[in-house]
Image (cartoon, rainbow, N blue to C red; front, side, top):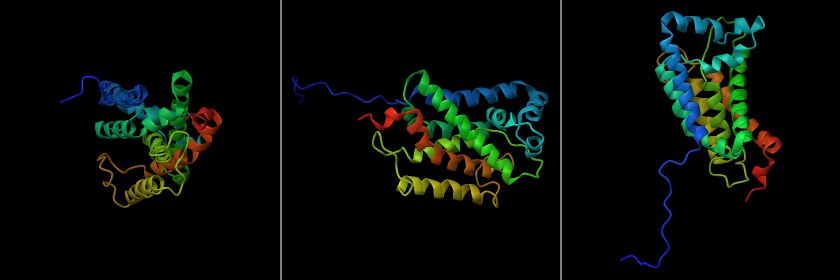
Length: 224
């Protein structure tokens, strides 16, 4: 029998992810819905205009490093990216903090990881004429950054030798490198996976999160 004088028990909300964590996956899915609504001809035109291609990058189309992040190759591609973003963005969102500054910082970090992943793909396929689309590089960057944040006390980062960092790095980089030899390993089902984009994006986020927080969010290291 409960004691009527005991203080009420506080219940944790069933789902307490930051709103920004929900917004990015919705943007990914909504963006691909707009692609579908454009019809086959419209989708082809979008791919021609905004997909990232090493050949076009060599010709000076640097804007494609950013634009390709907002396109996807199918519902499976968009859905997997949305799911991974939902799973791994929360630690980075919370580290960036609340308010407009935190939102802007997270979005810039996200896009920089996507640009880095796309650039890495192009540099490793410099003489090829192949187009890629998707936010996979950006989301891989969130995964790398999250490995240094997950399980760490507030104001701390996991060292590079910590279990979560080593384990996630070996798993994600290993699976993606293996997909170069087993194209269907990642389960996208829409052709070969741009594994270089994923690996470079992951490593970029892994390395960038520490300096990023120390430069733009010094309060993260001083908050108890």
